[in-house]
Image (tube, rainbow, N blue to C red; front, side):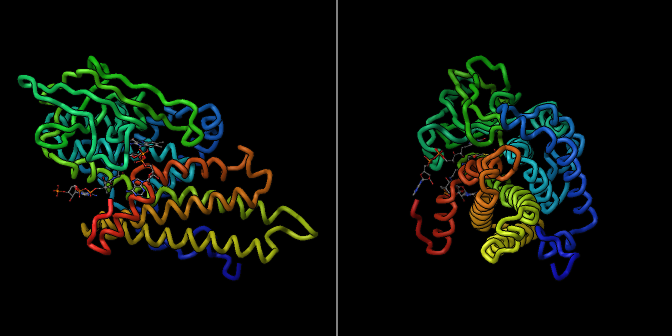
Length: 389
Ligand code: TGC
Ligand code: FAD
């Protein structure tokens, strides 16, 4: 490299533009991932196991609900939350998923829309990792269109009776509390279902080829009696769950960069060492062009995420900007992971190398939190003023 101080996976020196606090957050999460995640993640993926033993360590570093204020949460800015997601996903998308769901999809709605007793009961324990949450929006008949949900709650006396089911729910079978969105006579509302409520059950979804180090489940509600005090009082309508998705999608736009960086870093090492036709693989024009393409995609994704974070920290973020970044960055990361898999040749299909694991994970990440098409249509609607959903 002409300038040896340039980092090949950070060509525009994003790290140098961070504050000391942001760099400290990045360093501490990177250390945790190197010391505690990377040594076990391959086995976890092979064994289809979420490393639950890491939850207390994630909590001790302040990574659960990190951008919320009060209730034992760290109150970090948006850039720091993005860096947390990036460093965790450098390890594995499943670990970032756990933190996304706990922080953005469960703690966020309780913080934003919960009653004072709900906040006191759940948030400090969730920040400590003692209560694990899940978020139930998607249903089996069509996740892209949550407005058409069938799960419903009817008032009976002072309480609610909930019926229906949810599908593809991260953390579902290990959750102590589920934030469940259900149709009511007034519109969609959020319900806090504690594990063990009569009629509430979760079933693990097995045999996934993606996000194998993450728990994914179906949730079932059969006449679950939910007391009024477990209803989120602060929001009615689809904007409740969609506002949570904006938080989580923001984190994903950052997270996938870490997965792509991990793939490229490993590939640079490999192509530098592997000799074919009498020279290192990295010394072929065709290979360098592909490496440069990957660096271009990663750099563009980083700059988009950074600017998105600045908008969020200024309180000027629009959900359409989040859609554009989630779409662009997931697509970029998936393409990088697939290219790295290919350039590793046969070794690329081995669990010894990270790209195939990241590649398989990213197939979920590009689908959940709104598929690529959903985000393209959101941007299209913003451009044209016409709703094509
Ligand atoms: P529309 O009827 O127009 O809007 C409903 C109301 O919501 C408001 N709104 C938002 N508010 C806050 N943040 C946002 N991002 C918002 N987007 C819309 C909107 O202003 C309106 O408010 P009001 O007061 O007028 O009622 O609904 P829409 O046309 O915007 O929505 C359509 C569409 C397709 C974009 C939406 O349904 C959608 O996003 N579908 C995709 C569903 C999805 O992403 N599901 C994800 C499930 S969770 C998950 O995947 C977790 S994986 C986690 C992990 O493991 O990491
Ligand atoms: P569908 O909505 O049926 O879409 C199928 C295909 O049709 C997609 O390619 C889509 O882009 C396309 N499509 C849809 N509408 C249109 C259109 N109008 N025009 C053109 N094409 C269209 N959900 C939760 O609520 N909580 C969770 O914690 C959670 N975790 C998940 C974890 C994993 C590992 C996975 C895979 C999913 C998770 N999900 C979760 C669900 C996820 O959000 C949904 O899978 C996603 O929103 C898509 O819904 P669907 O699978 O029903 O696909």
